[in-house]
Image (cartoon, rainbow, N blue to C red; front, side, top):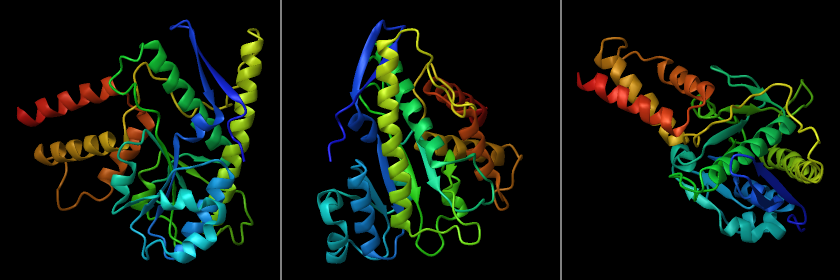
Length: 298
């Protein structure tokens, strides 16, 4: 299946230039992250689903059983993608350099994040990629992160119980698939298939919309009814940087007697959610880091 037949145009008026991307350029910014899977066959089935929908980056976090021949047999045409999968010991290491994180969840959890449909998630992803790419062009590729493509993760949990509250807390958005309310649970590979299909379909629509807009300067740019993500004048921080801020802020509050190190309860999770909601950029991260360091020293 060819997924690079349509091209995209990212207009950047401040740079007075246009950046062209193929649909594959968009999809290559996305990685599927499977957490603590039980059955190797499900990893293979997920790889097959990804390959069918043009996705190529698979990360497996601490699988209970390693990728084996059953994985390969279930991967079918996606066996090459399966063999290039990244295996990591922790979720933190898997998403450390991600700027945007989604988590597939069938139900609301403690400390919920904004809930979006697969279609809304796809729109947010591609809008984010457009803005980050336009920012790099506007900065004439002088940004510290200008040589890096945006990195977006979509998390999928265990076959029997999905993602834990702590794992869901890493996500900026939760994706829920419309399903029978009496049993809204999908096999993890099926969930990958469903969400990936929405992403691939929206990539095609997004490409066509951008191309049509480029052909007609008076065309109205489509927007979401609710703007769930801000536009930065600097690159967004990574998940690793957000967690560093959470830890430093927690340590500072303990140092200043504002929190008890033995009874933090939901403090780190609330700080993480606050960071996701504020949507910090690199300059803001530097300012807050400097402020925390000063307060901790004084």
